[in-house]
Length: 206
Image 1: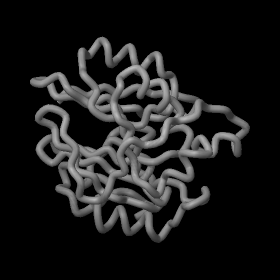
Image 2: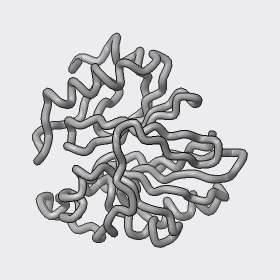
Image 3: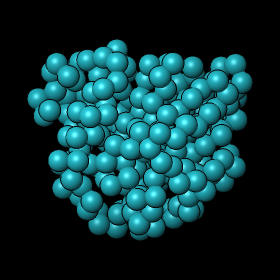
């Protein structure tokens, strides 16, 4: 598996470029800003991007959707419950910020769906709480999961923004993420990677 992490935007969001070494196909997860840096990394990686994926649609995770979709020609995919947030540019105006308008999604994703890029199989897990349509993209064979702003190393996502629900967030972590193997590596929307087992043992918020 090819994996590049690019910290983008003012909130240092982790944008992930994930690809299949064999087929040279990949995806972009959460292009939240700095589109030229993302495009440059795609070009250097030699990947054909099959999907642009949003774990959720706060501005710092979708701010460069338009540029990345245009540059790659890849379909934009997200959970339908995120469309209202997408249509108001991720709520950027509430923070006095401006981001590019995103194109509408080409695909609406549902829990249990599988997306393929070469030999990689991304299982779609609906993990609401931080936002209603929050998604985790889980690659069982690679032992990794990209969970947006749900669970961090020694932290959890905030639930005080519109659509946030702390009870739903805790259920998503306990009933979905914590059911994955302990050795699964969690790549969150911000900060360093962690593992399911580490967060089960040490996360003070769960």
